[in-house]
Length: 568
Ligand SMILES: Cc1cc2nc3c(=O)[nH]c(=O)nc-3n(C[C@H](O)[C@H](O)[C@H](O)COP(=O)(O)OP(=O)(O)OC[C@H]3O[C@@H](n4cnc5c(N)ncnc54)[C@H](O)[C@@H]3O)c2cc1C
Ligand code: SF4
Image (cartoon, rainbow, N blue to C red; front, side, top):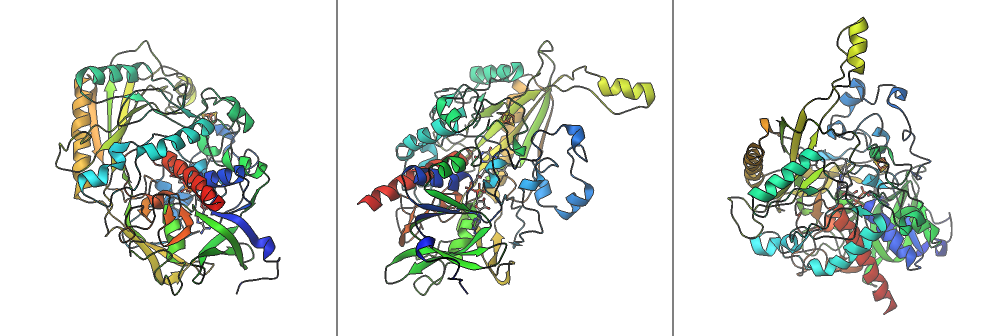
């Protein structure tokens, strides 16, 4: 039963409600606050204040009980989240542990989550590329999913808007399939990365190895200082939360900015159970929340609602928002809610050695992670037996050959041995996947969480297209590495479950036709126009670029639309 006594309805009434305070919700909150709307941000997890709540940020390796490693006990208790590369002793407090928030794996799926103010924006690898019309045209050109209702020109100004405020480093590379943005200086490639970049440029048409574009303040501007952020010190300890605000997170940037506007209220420990719909008014009136500490149900009201709970949780909230008008979930006239879920495919890698450039070292760190190879397959025409393509990371490094072998004098010598290894090079694949009806999420019919909300059931899997793409990545990269003179080339693929790339998308897709899609070109539910979904759930297709920059641009664009509509 809803508790109506804690305060009056007017105190629980806002102009706008944002569900989720992570990467995309932070942007919705900031934009709404900047435009003067009285806004409530609801976050299921605890508050994480910039700096104050980064307990490990300044710790030395020897100050950790297990030198940064996760103990066998924790690993065994968390087989899913432990598979995420960033789950270490220094950052595990920002990850959802396996048993805390169960879900149903109809097919194996590694669901990596961060339930706190800031969401996964604290944990991300900060890779930020714009999408292009080669991505937005994709479904129409290649005959899958539905046509995107927008094109690059619709979103380009909003990419600029985000990039200037968040701070994105990169070069103006002039590549049509990877549009340039409003960049701070790039983190340069090292000697061997530059060598490979030059080699690829000389020997391949339309293939490029560029400095990775990432959300780090390589050279902050006034707008970044105004947020209380400072230059990135290249510590590469970002997943702990950065005391300098050197990388973009909702915690260091959008959420404190929104709160400073004086128009925004943040309510942590508030899990949104559903969105309320009024049949007479033909619109959503607010949300039903459970206070995760007291288990009280509380209703909040607003003219407009932004759903930014991250892709799969946004699906869950809509599926759980039923009424006699929408018995199968809010806005679900098309029957597509929860379907056409897609993700990325990171399951192929390649490593090798380079026996030159010994006069160069990699002293100093690169928070961007090295190089980025934009998609080169099937860009201008279909050229393979699979649809779409993949981008790839590329990095080269040397390491100090310290070891803990031996005893006594030998051990001491080995521990302080600072001779450098030869160069190692490596790459990983980032593949686009094709959204399919059979890849879906739904509410479990019998199991509920501790607040009585049905558990999410996930049934998604890779397909033959993914397998062919993986094979092609291995062949192409092996060929490129061989022609560059790299030796001891070892390619590997793994049979990981989907999810571990942490780029889940879809289920509430955009489209022109309300019969086949959930959202219109402004990210509003076709059938309930005061609810906007601007996170990964809204994606019609996945591209192979990292998605978060696009979610943020979508959120800012949708707020602008909502506010201009309300002025009408
Ligand atoms: C290790 C790692 C590396 C990554 N690297 C990259 C990268 O390099 N580039 C990139 O683009 N992306 C990357 N990502 C993915 C990126 O973090 C996500 O795409 C992004 O955070 C999604 O934004 P979001 O707002 O949808 O979700 P989140 O940032 O997860 O925020 C969602 C928020 O909603 C809250 N919430 C959920 N359900 C409810 C509810 N019912 N009621 C109230 N609140 C709710 C959650 O607690 C959370 O705080 C990475 C992620 C991880 C973990
Ligand atoms: S690399 Fe930059 S952003 Fe990351 S922790 Fe260090 S200073 Fe902060």
